[in-house]
Structure formats: C-alpha cells, structure tokens
Length: 267
Length: 284
Image (cartoon, rainbow over all chains, first blue to last red; front, side, top):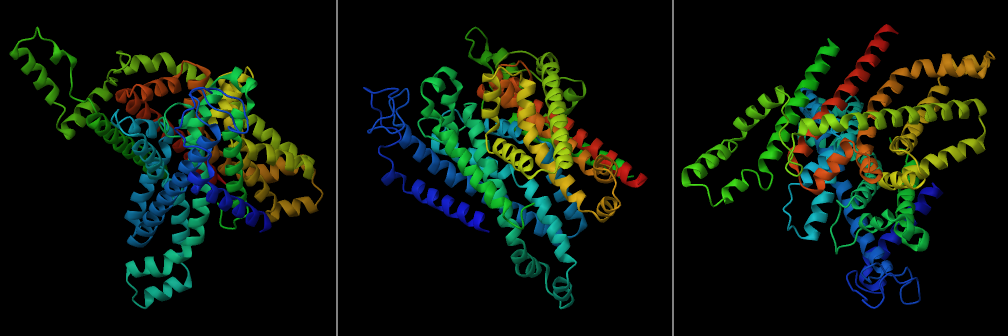
C-alpha cells in the first residue's frame, strides 16, 4: 500500500509540474536560439539545446504535458468503451456477447501497430500537428478496447450470477437500470485497474511511433518525438543528456507499473 | 464442433477485416486519381475511358467484391510508392521476417522457460528480485529503444525481437507457474518429499500447458508487432520494414493488405493454440 501511495504521489507531482508547463519551462518549446545549436548543458539550458537551438528541458516539459494528458485520455476512452461494450454484451444476451467477443478477437488478432499505421495514413498530408497528435492518441484509444473488454465481460458474467443481481432481476429491474445502477459501480475498481494498465501501454506506443518518425509531427514536442535523437549513436556518446526523455519515460512507466502491481484488481 | 465454430469465427474475422481493408483503401486520400489524366496528349475519349475505369471503385460493395475476387486469385494490388505488386514485395520479404520472428520467439521462449525453471529450482529471493527487476525494467522501455539498443550492441534483429518478447513472456510464465505451485496437489506432492525437478516438470508444468499454449498464441501477435520497429531501425529488409516504409509514404494498398494477411496469420495461430488447448483439456 505504501508503494502505491508513493507512486501515486510522485505521478501526481509530475502531472502538476507538466500541467503548469508554461510557468515551469524556461522557454517556449518552439523558441530557437540560433546562436546556440547543440549547446551543452549550462545554467541557461540545463539539458542543452537540440540541433535547431531549442531548449531541451522546455521541450521535455511541454512534450511530457502532451503525452501525459493524452495517454490517460486515450486510456479513458479505451476503458470507457470496454465498460460500455461489456455491460451491453453481458446484459443483452448471448448473441450480443458472442458478437462483442468476435469483435474483440478481431481487434486482438490485428497487430495494433499495423492497424494504427494503416488508419493514420488516411490523414491528409497538411493536417496540423495538434490534430495529428489528437488523432494518434484517439486511434490508440479506439484500438485498445478489446483486452480490457474481455476482462470486464468476465467480471460482468460473474456479477450476473451474484445474489444482488438475481434479487434485482426478480424484483423486475429493467436491463438498463441493472447495468447502470447495479453492475457498473461494481466494475469501477476493475476499470480503474485497466486504466492504470493501459495508460503506460499508450505512453510506450507513442514513444515507439515517435522514434519511427510516425508520431507527433514537429514542431510540437512529445516524449516519443524527443527520442528520435537516440537514432544517432555518436551523439549519445558525446552528449548523454539526450537520454533524459528516455529516463523520464522509463520512470513514469515504472511508477504506473508500481501502481498496477499494488492494485488488488489488476489482471 | 468447437474447432468448427472457431474456424467459422476466423473466417468471419477475415471477411470483416477484408471489408475494413477495402473500405480503408477506398476512402484513402488520392484514391480514384490517376496521373495519366494530367497528360495533355490524351484526347477527351481517352480521358473519359480512364475516368470510367476509375469510377468503377466508387461503389464500396462492388469494390469489395472485386477486391475479394482479386484477393482469391492472389492479387493484392500494387504498391503506390514502390510501383510493384504487393504480392511480389511480400514474397521477397517474408523469409527475412519469418527467420527473425521465429528465431526471436524461440530465443525468448527458451530464455523465459529456462529462467522460470532456474528460479523455481533455486527459490532464492535475490535471484527472484533481480529477474523481476530486469523483466520489469525491460517492460518500461519502448520497443523501438530496445531494438536500437540491440542494434548498437551489434545484435541481430532476432535478438532484438527476443529481448522485446522475453520480458512479456517471462512475466506471464512466472505468474502461471507461481500460481500453479500453490495448487493443493503440488503442496501434497511437496509434503511427500518429491524432488524439486520432478515436482516442477510433472506436477507444476504439466497441468499448466493449456495456459502456456494460449500464451504461445499471443506471443505470435507480440512478435509480429515487434517486427516493425526492429526491422525499421535495424535496416532489416523484412515485412516490418516494408510496412514502415509504406506508412511513411502513405502507401495504403501495402498497409491494409499486409495488415489483413498478418491478422489472418495471427488469428490462425491463436486458433491453433486454442484448438490444442481444447483437445488437451478434453483428453485430460
């Protein structure tokens, strides 16, 4: 429990810092210092500057804000969809349940990265960076419902056999009320656990897409986009501070894993 | 009967996936455009003929029918960016990806199984903590960074795939074995003084084969997903690299057809794992 509390406090602190990016970051993420490209860490630039003379620390903070806001939002979308689908499938009968599970099988059989790349290629070439970022995380959210829905449907089926649901049914409780009033509140702890499992998955997915050059486009920073500097091995050896986004990402994902491992509802 | 219903589900999945793929190609930006229309040497009749040819794809149902007919003949269409048939590109690259994927999966499974057996036999808390920490740390690193790390260390793509899969397989396998060790029959066998290795192989591992087979099915999907970053970053000319190049060039015919094929293969692998598991359970 203590581990969980420490992880939650650290994540909330980080979240607070990233939300206040305008006040915390020394410069704007797009401000260029053209006389100081690839500068080493100094008092003015604690993590140095990139090849375009932009402050790395500011970009790390602003990038973190985007990733840390949108990954949980995408996870919320996934878990919300999973909750709705599992409640519908569980309450409406066997055929709905089979249909939902067939859809989940289709989603799980489809390697998400392939599907994501295929759908993302539909975006117009001149789409603004913010729209691309929203679409990328939105797609992650839409594609990630299948795994949580299987876990939640199993829980719905278990709850449907419980005494309180049988009593509600015997009292003539309509299906909608049964789902919303009797089942949904009992699924919330499981939904929270699934949210905690899914958020780091989306953070890592965005990082992988960013490193492949398929994530959030310039000049908008994201943790994935900042990792693109790692593709140059000599520059890592010469300026190890470019590893900072990776270390922060690992720490954040580690904190989420710590939260999950201490959660009694994690599956 | 169970196998037949699973096969029917697989077929439904493939047909639904095909419809999705055809719809994606149909609604892609640039669909129905032909650079021949810009040729000033063509007369009106020729342009009308080209436009009529292009308009055949405007009805999505007819387009899907034509798409299925071509798919049945093995025609997956042409790559926009590379100007070559997708089938030809896939046949050139499948071997490379199969080798990397299978070798990586084999290595990951062998290492994970070995680690679980050693940990279970040794029962040392320090070893357990180190293994959990190493696997947990690997899970916190993006797959693309793991691939880059392997590349910088001089490893082959298969090693990168193995490093990506190991942490996931190890974690699930360890949980399966750990919970199996708490089963009453294992505790009874332990109390009878049966040797650790025999206990592990006959009493712990044997009953959890169905779960291990299911995990094997899932690991195929994991390996396929890992191939894109690995091949793109390690410059390995496989299907993963083709997909990455297609994504960069917005080459939708390549992307959707490869996605469809991979979905079919993954679903088939899961079907096989499920069937083995069902047969094993029925036999038991």
